[in-house]
Length: 509
Image (cartoon, rainbow, N blue to C red; front, side):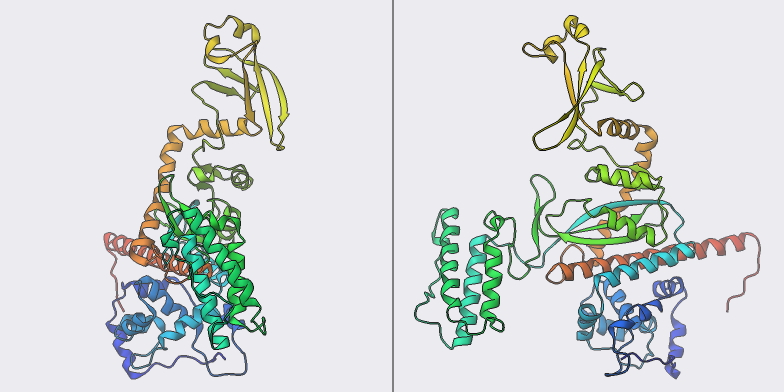
């Protein structure tokens, strides 16, 4: 139950006058009105019954402090109780008690949802747009990886842990392990061949599950049945044995992803959109497992950004975002896409060919041009165009042996249906203006480093996709507020310098 009463300041609150006006927490409070949080979370509380709950706004402010300074639940309560600026920021009198650390975890799990955190980030950005803190019209998108808060196990070890859990729960429910069940788990480390080791452990686990199910009296309430169901989901996935699915029973949402062809990680990917230039404010965040392909959720993040009041005129991204749906979505909003051409999407070697969109012809580097165009559909349904060059010119060309093999009379060039459009993007991306503009995307790498190095996004603090999603969004909110404080401070300093240069007399109250 939420209390509806105004805040009463005590005699000791006079100590708050010692906090300087340029303190980061005062600048944040000055720039952002957090009162909307109470209304946003009102429906998650009982209106008439129950004990008076801690105000959602106060809890959000505590979480902001926690992620701003990268502290644990217990440590943030200890540090806040000793810090006047922090006590003032959360809205308590110096002598008042802070909530128990466990309440922070309960608030994150039971009150905050991913959608709610998206709404909070969106509202903060919207307020910044309204107040003129965000003035730019360019955005950038990228993803960064986060290591799981657990080790990566081989399938044999996962199977062993599942077997141990089944035996443990069955023993607790029955008082002892039934005689028909073999409790001696095979030692997979003694088997040199990994393939044989996996097959041995899988066969043992399947036999164990089958026999254990015969001793379960009530499957709906049995902990053993729950473990067996979980084990069945894991081992019946073909990619599990290939080491491409569950690699830890502690965190079953984490996956192995690739940072490059030779470098992999075990954990999650955080994808986010942010404004570029001097503002560098994150507008939307999404979290996926490590196998996520960059750009898949671009539309959802882009829509959240627009809902926050950002009117994008320029969109930056790396090669992973060079896709037809993304380019079309940006074009629909009459924005300019500054995204390098991906060789996996556009495979034309422009050192050998160039295109004339007016005549719809391709030209080779030796001067020949296409004279025929034919649509083509392969067995998988993929459409393409086959262009044929002038056979008379090919016939007399001194470089004929480099281009044509066998009995072909003329060279052919097969391109995708979007090749002509990609060619235009490619030509524009090579201009000096585009190359200079693309440098604006570098701020996204700074933001990745900031969140990982100073705010703990390099490693998950909990387990599971939901926990990681909450961590990423709270981290984004914290770095946003830190940046907002810097922008407000610079703005106030500019005003002060302007008035001083004009010879104005300034009275400070």
